[in-house]
Length: 356
Length: 282
Image 1: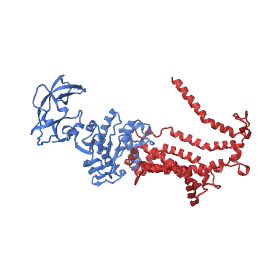
Image 2: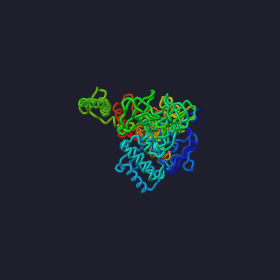
Image 3: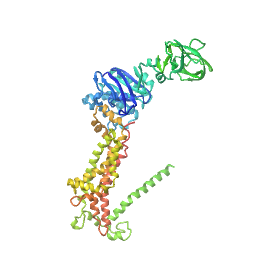
Image 4: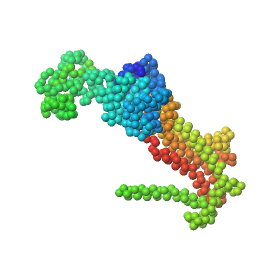
């Protein structure tokens, strides 16, 4: 187990080209020992490259990797003692389930009785105990993925377990249970877990810390609450949360007031900028339905009200802008005009897509 | 409707089976005929239409002094040369193919695909082009008319087949398997031998089958590069030909020489039809 530090890491897959495209732009990042992280971002944003750099499958073209104080940048994968689980199940088809699970321990020459104990323990966790003597090849896709996961879990002393969207092929119910298991394992063994996903719910429920990436850069790292309430960029606001954050172009009317079209809104941000690329962002969860006008309220035409069972989602328009509000389902929503309030404390102001 | 389908299916299978087996039946019956039964018009049923005789077969095993050709020595020579060359080709070809599939090579403008093509291009060349170079090559090594010389030449001929089939095979084996093995604690060699290789048996069987077929049927190089000390089966069989074509012993020789290929095909087919390729990923 170790703290993993990425020191000025950058990576390009075409190092010999002028002006190469960087899959990972220069960044420094550290992963605390025993932490539970989610790496979140759209496809192709560099998540997998980052994992491969940590596991040693990819050698970064720039920068250094440390496990605690030890530099491991050029250390080969087998010496790093890292576990990595890929998106699609990888099994050793010619071996039994037991041999598959025992393989990482066998490779590292653990004594036979220890291997047996550990394999049975992990098989129990993953509900594979009845299949141990089966050939791995004949199992279903999700069972195969459990084997991949199991191979990551059999070693207690790993520096970290890196998981690259590991639950994609697993059905929702088992997915939920496995995430809880992974949390338990993290609590019990204090193994660092780094979990790559593009599913924000998965990230929010699994991790203490979420790192959001976009186009090879870390755009925000923080707790699920931070990411939800104070997205650092409009990208994070848009990417995290369902529905995405409401974002409107706005202009400054005074230090604590902005206007969208002709309508003025109070905000708690001190705006000193004269930039003309300002945006107001507000989560649909924080927009309330009011019966009469007050500060920061606006009147909008209801386009659609969707009932999601546990909440209602109002889609309305004002000044030809769409606004989405998530409200309690008991609430009666007028069918034509609705008064919506944008509380000042939840209004985020973005300049050039960055939070001020 | 399904009944009609089943009927048609079996009908065509039976038809195809007849088509495949007819030449064999023809050869079998001819091998038991004598001169008169062959030249006196088409006959099919032994004892009824012609009197079977073992003359055609006995020629194959009689020594030269008694007018035979004695194929036993050449037969084992052929088996030895083909198997040895195929085995070496598969071993070297598999290693080369794995490297070509997993690692990036670059020398100027030459890259992995060019190297793979270089191997295959050895098969594109007409054998005649290679005959003189091979002759000079073997004679300078003192390996003309020897088993070792033939094996060397056959490796050159068979390895491209092995490389070609195995590169394609390894390209379809997901890289994640190697990577997982590395993560699980193997070094690259262990990853290859412990994980990738056991999964590659079907590919190696196919490559082996092709190597054995192409090695076994080669007449040209065996004819050019050997004289009296070492002879392979195809060369020996051709020696049967004389002013009167001995159809009976040629048929017997054809049956004897095709038998090992049929046996190999039956063994390998079992492994192929299992679909061993699937299931490693997804």
